[in-house]
Length: 160
Image (tube, rainbow, N blue to C red):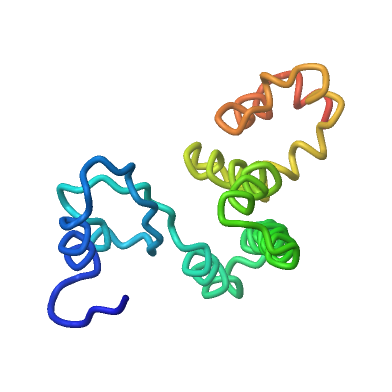
């Protein structure tokens, strides 16, 4: 369905979904992250468009090559998984389940790092550098506290 006019996508979606039976479960809405794409007063399961998100990293990759490389390489795993699902002609629900199992961990790490204001590239680099300490004390190496662990006396004696 394509609608054009003066309304934003969220307003158009609201108008279309207002005709939907209320007894149905919330529909999955694919869109970019612009707030005006979200329909007011209607519940949807928001699935942000991965292509739009990836493009944001491609646009700044020249200025932030290391940071963007990690995310873009991680997203390549997700795109490969999607190609596999399509080649195997999976149903929508099977494809979603396949992604939850195979792409979910990759996306989860990116999301956790975002929530913790941690650079995924820096975080994973430190995990690799401190693999023995990570194995011994995994709680000290979570995205939300690994910087404190690095700043602590144990990390500085290991680094020296």
